[in-house]
Length: 328
Ligand code: GAL
Image 1: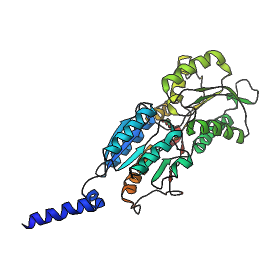
Image 2 (image 1 turned 90 degrees about the horizontal axis):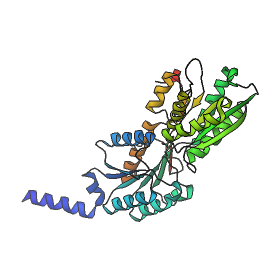
Image 3 (image 1 turned 30 degrees about the vertical axis):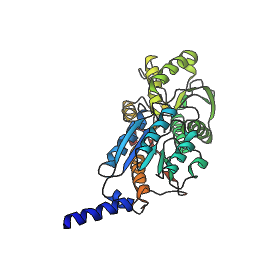
Image 4 (image 1 turned 90 degrees about the vertical axis):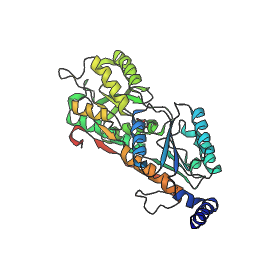
């Protein structure tokens, strides 16, 4: 009899006090990645899943580079009653629709890696962005090249006092591609160098594409190339593949190449001496910040949240320069 009464009280509580129901089960979170083949995003998602252990049930969905597909996936999960969304949008400029969807279903949404426009984020008080400032990573990769040219004046191969560079760009329109491109060059200029862009090629963050583009660039510009700035490590590694095929990195033929992310393969290339330097895009701290923010936003209790939330919507995770001497 007493058991039955206790059960009735529990069921009533669950019915009329939804947050108490949440306390009895782990929250469900949808994690939507723009393209599951992206090397850096794989490490971020792996970390989110790891931190979720014992805290939330996370379902990972691959947008396969299609915003239409990702929209369907988000709506599907909302209809199934998910408690929060973590979205790495395919097209960051359309995030407004996803913010509105989260708002309609009254669940929090954490955007990651591809920054929505400010006005699309702040229209909902439970919408957040976890990412970093691409101006920082751009500046750091430019500094790596500047330091190299200061230490190796002979790297100015034609001795004209100008650094002739190749820029491998990520996806056009992506804040990281646009701003890393601009700020890496600004950093070289700020360090007192005159620069000349030989060619700027988008290679969509992808190693194989960058390798192919770089082979053509080497065929066209040959010895005029004095360094390669790449918006990420995958493309830097693709450039190194092409440079190796053209005889670089043997018999003292070096080409300064820098990337961003500090992926495991990039760290190998640093140790091997092919990649000059990279910038840590901190997947571990981003993964922690993302999952813990989604969980905190579900309950509304941010008291244990270990990162600073800026302007009620933003969590910024800093970058750091990594060279062969500073790999930990
Ligand atoms: C950047 C990262 C790239 C790629 C891109 C995807 O932050 O450096 O490697 O993962 O995000 O949006």
